[in-house]
Image (tube, rainbow, N blue to C red; front, side, top):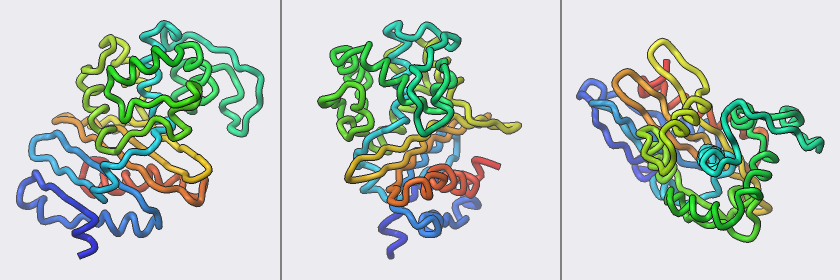
Length: 260
């Protein structure tokens, strides 16, 4: 019964595929983490699931997954001209070596250069940031006291289900931004590709004195449609849990036949 109460699976498949057993609970148990995973398969006869439904509706700080939205805001306000504009490193050495260099939009997303997005947030300002959060209906649309930290200080919060909704709008170019900018961000989100699929995703890791939350959100583009996913997990062991953000969804997506 534990499996049934913690895992809601909606099968939209042929009977043959419906008979396959999804070992999602076992995958989470093997990883020894608490969390949720939402997979929304928009292909004909696709298979969707929600693991830990109550948590899928609970909001957490988006951490670096907000860079998807933040990059769109930076482009729309003119803070960023294009993917080629270079932003000089501020000279402050940080523990993540890849941050300690000049950045452009592509590299800032790839390495999650927090300092650059904090600079942009200060230039954009509270009023405009708030306007965009409301236009996007992004989570609880709350900035809080510090415009340079609202996505990592537990002010702004979003649920896994809401992440999926946001990603679906981006996929369809339906966010309140220029279509060209949305297409650019989707290009920058490419993690890898196979012969018949493209994986677009963004990870996140937020730490406060009370919690450590890890994210991996995105979608896999297949020839017959997209498969969206959003995972968040507690990360009490810090860096030891970091790789689980991607390994758990990958295992589930492979079991569903979405990834090779």
